[in-house]
Length: 143
Image (cartoon, rainbow, N blue to C red; front, side, top):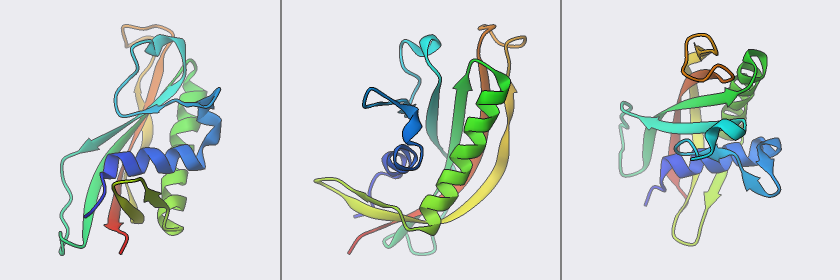
């Protein structure tokens, strides 16, 4: 069975961006944390789209990677690093293995390059910047 792609992407980013962990706790989430204004963090959102020619063998998935930080430069840097980390994870066949599922990533494509979505002037939170990139990544079950 093909593993949960969103969980696999989060695990890959955790692996390739260890600096986004604080005291052993990851700051890469599937949805923003409740105390989101107190830390810089990354949100991975699975989006619609993608189709596999062989859906029983692999899944083609689209993801938005949203990087929140307190400065525009840091949000941009984190977003570009996240895109590079996903490319590396796909190139190296990052393996996602849990007690119940296992798979590996391949076939990375940048759909939309990281760009500033909102800044302190245009958002409700004057001290927060968010850069977002969209990526296509495929995942296959380990056999």
